[in-house]
Image (cartoon, rainbow, N blue to C red; front, side):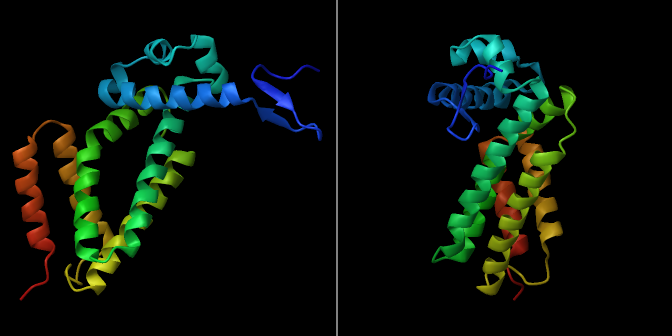
Amino acid sequence: MSNPPGRRETGGGVPVQRADARANRVRILDVAEEVFGKGGESASTEEVARLAGVGIATVFRHFPTKAALLEAVLVRRFDRLREQAETLLDAADPGKAFADFFRYLVADAPAKIGIAEALLDAGGDGGGEAAQASDELRRAFGSLLRRAQQAGVIRDDVELPEVYALLAGVSRAAADGHLDEEGRAQVLTIVFDGLAPRP
């Protein structure tokens, strides 16, 4: 039986993606993240294929459905954010690390929410690998919160669900266009003031 396009077999009969197929997959994901991050559910796989310089058949060879493509984009985005959070766990200033990452997540929210909404519109349920990657990001964020609390710069009577609810609220407001850059900065100042230890 012949191998699927873009694959060859190793000596043990295990299929391995060719380098050009791997490069196509990465390029498709890069473009899809940008296209769906900006266009949300109105963006199309045809636009992704055109901007990635591949045929639509190549996109669907790697990702059988639009939902599969969007889930892969979302998983990769969550993984990248989690890795960023984990690198901050050794920061010399835990309070600054937590606040900087909180700000970054809010700034990143419009694109992330656009991709997530496109996934739901394409028939995905946001479960599976995307849900697992989201949970891992949440745990990494929780570790940053605990370090900041241990350093005495975040009040110790708040827990992760409460702080994550604040993050989600500010992120949604930013994504919906209710906050310009100045408004977002002011809201974040209020949030951080509220999270500061009580005198």
